[in-house]
Image (cartoon, rainbow, N blue to C red; front, side):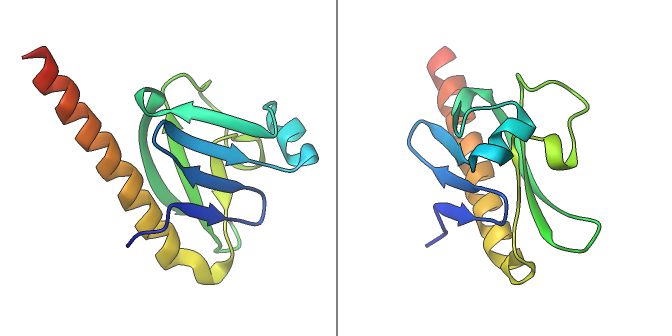
Length: 113
């Protein structure tokens, strides 16, 4: 079974029925301009991917439709940096998120038909 939670070096992402919940320390949340507990609904999520930092650590990037363009790195409220040995967990989590998004889009398309 895939992970439904990722704990990184600068935050945590929880996979919930309603979407993703980002949890950050007070200073990390202030740096990104969000609350410490930041919920993003499935309808707002466009996808997720695994990237890497300049030092080679895995980085989970969640693309949110309503997020301002141009945010990257330390200021992106929808990115969580992980420990170097967590690349497999990051890939599994991203696959789970993308599968959930695809499933919800199919449901929406079927409901409209």
